Each structure stands twice: as C-alpha cells, then as structure tokens.
Length: 464
Image (cartoon, rainbow, N blue to C red; front, side, top):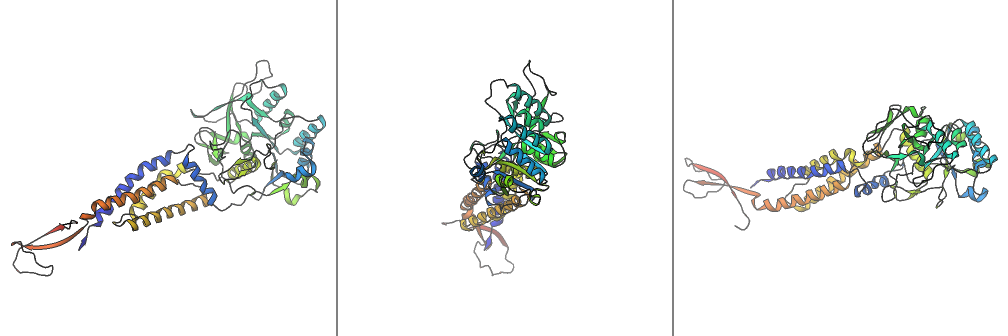
C-alpha cells in the first residue's frame, strides 16, 4: 500500500494560508473599539502584576482622612505640600480639583506652598459643556496655562480633533501661576464606548484665542497642544519641559527624543496598567499631616496626591481592563510609569498581520490529517502555543497579539481540513498492480522473466 497524503498536506497548507490573509489584514486594521478590544483585556487579566517604580507613591485622600479630619481644604493641602517638601519629595503631583476658591487665608496658604515647593504639578479640567465666557479669574488661569502648552514642532493628521481653548478649566489662577506645570486629567475624554479606560488622551490640540476685550496671552492665535497631567509629570521627571515633547499625532509621542509612545491621530495612547487597583503603595493623607516628616518614605520620590474614596465624585474612579474600577490618581501613576520606563502597550493591530500569518503557517503544518480528531487536537495545540507566545510577549514587552482572528483562523483551519479530507478520502489510498500484456494480474512478488510489464496506480474508490 502506498499513501498519497503529501499532496493533501501541501494543498491544506496553501488553503489555510489563503484563509489567513484576510484575517491578517483585519487584525492589522482593527484599531477602533470593538470585540477585539474587549477580548484583549484578557492579556491584562492573565499577566502577573508588575512592580511599581520604587520612587512612586500615592498620598490618598481616603476614607480614614475624611473620618478623622473631615473634607480637606486648601490650607490642609498647603500643609501637606510643605510636609512633603520637608521630607525631600522630588515631585508633588496634585491630581485633585483646585478650580474653586475658599477663604483668602486658605488660598494663600496653598498657593504659597505650591510656589515654595518649586516642584508641584497641578490638574486642569476640560469643560466640554461650557458655553459662557470665562470670568476674569479663569482667563488669568488660561494665560498661565500657556506656559505648559506645547506650541512648537508638532504634527497633526486630518483626524486630529481641535479643542476649544476657552473650554479648558485650569485651577484657580493663583494656584496655576504658582505651579511648575499643569496638565489635563488623564480620564478626560478618554473612555471607550463601554466606559472602560484603556487609553488616555496625551494631548489636546487647541487654537489659543481670547475674547476681544480681554487681555491677550503670549500664544494668542497660535495653535498649541495642552499635555495631560501624566505627560507633564513624565517630562518633568525626565529633566525636561514642554519644549522637550514631540507630538506627532497618528505616529508617536516622545520625550526629548526618548521613550517613544504610540499616539493615534486623536491624541490617545494606551495605558500599560501594571496591575489592578491598590498596586501602587498608598499613605493616608491624615497620617502625613499629623505625623512627623518621613524622609525615609518620601525622599526623592514622585508623590501623587488624589482622592481614593469609593463612590466619591472627586475620586473619578473608572473601569479598567481588569474588570474593576480604579481612582484617577492611580490611572495617572500607571501612565507616568509607562512613560518613564519607555514601555508602551503595543495594541493587537501593531503585530496583528504577521502574528496571524505566522499562526496560519503553524496551523498549516500541524493540522492537516485525514482524521478529524487528530486535526482538531493539532489545531487546538497550535492555538495554545500561540496564546503562550502572546502571554510571554505581553508579560515581557507589553505586546498584545490579536485573539479573535486567531480563534477564528484555528476553527476555520480545522473545519477546512476536515472538509478537504472528506472530499479526497475516496481517492487517498492507492495500490500498485502489475499486469502482463495478457491482462492477467500477478502477485506483487511474482516475476516472470521476459514478460513486458506496465505499472500504474489504480485508486481504490470506496464502494467499488
């Protein structure tokens, strides 16, 4: 007996690769939100937690703080900044809303503490629904925001949105004037349609305009990019300022030519979460205020101050790929770490084309068999190898491989091979028959000297 499986294997391999091509193109272009985005959350959920940077810490406006001292005011935040400065904090990031005034004494206590620290960065809001003209204090704050806006050497795409300059809502003018820099909250305008925060907006393109009768700013009538709080924090930590930022919408965001991050045309960059909520160490705000300075805890550290009280509007907790909610201040911490360590998330479309073609080749080599059971097992084994490689890539390099196209290709390869085998099985085996000129069959071991012989294949068709 003689097997004719080799042509079948080559044919199945070719058909599987042809089937892989459209799926590879789909994986390469599936950048928008959709089922693949939701499926990719599994990479975060299965990856072991990564360690936070040792120089990052959160001072939390937590439930303990509210229970023991009530709602902290501006004077309390001023005292906190002075405590952190005395303890040697390297940077103080105020991821809290400071857009309302309190008493003159309380406001002065806060803005002088911000100014004296020389290392305080503060939050900016974007008021999407604002229609009224900003008041004089807000206009003064907007002019102060100009010093954090990046207005030189940036590139935009046709799909890059433009934001209204007068819709930015910076902190009260005294606070923003006193700060080293300011950036927009990372959760602003960044949620996917299912309300999960997978990407944060790294920059807002806006034309700097003021009402005609108002005092004009230095950047009036120029286009500028307002960075997010995580971006202004990262570039400050790296020793630069807004001039060290390189915004190329649709391509990348870079810091002094280093640490490039993917930046889509809308200004969004993926958040490389190192773990679910509570991954970063926290210290209660009340413990810092009522305790002694702790240089061993805060010296040379990046300290983020924010609310962590569940169900509090100031916390602005958002759903993450882990299936749980995370306070805004911890989202900021995750994004800052991704920028500093130059470890961006490569979403499925980045490696999608070659990943699916490679899987197609592997399935084409493993799956073809005339028996359905072994084909299915081989296909599942190929998919398991693909998922293992994807898990290692995401663990080591934060590179996502597409999941749904891979699953679809595996199932299609198994089904295609089974159909091809069923069609060819009647012709799959052949026997060699030797005949003499007389037409009489002889046994396979018989040899009649001097008798001409012809050899051909007779297919044993089922049923005959």
